[in-house]
Length: 130
Picture 1 (cartoon, rainbow, N blue to C red):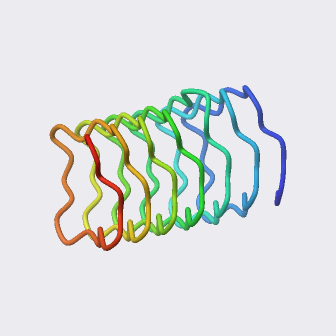
Picture 2: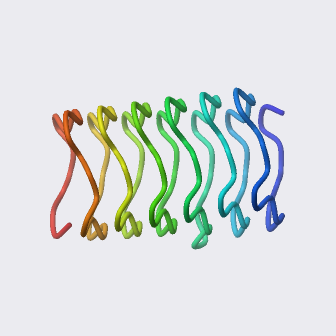
């Protein structure tokens, strides 16, 4: 489903493990509790306050993804590849980012209260006002 349009769809609880969604437009989608484990989501557009509370994005490839304003409360991003991703204004309270690669990502004013960033790579990441 490369470059697919999934705008505004309710995929709550969907099982999309290892799905290829590179370049997909998923603005305004509802993805609460969805399972994207090891999914290929490079350059995906998840803007518009996408609800991804409790989603599993463990080991997912999200390089260059736009998650501006995404709601990722309690999401699992363990070992996720988020190099160069835009997480500005994202809500990541209680999210698990253990061993995530955030090199070059932007997290301007991201909400990180209670998030676990143990062993995460934040080299050259923009964490201003986070």
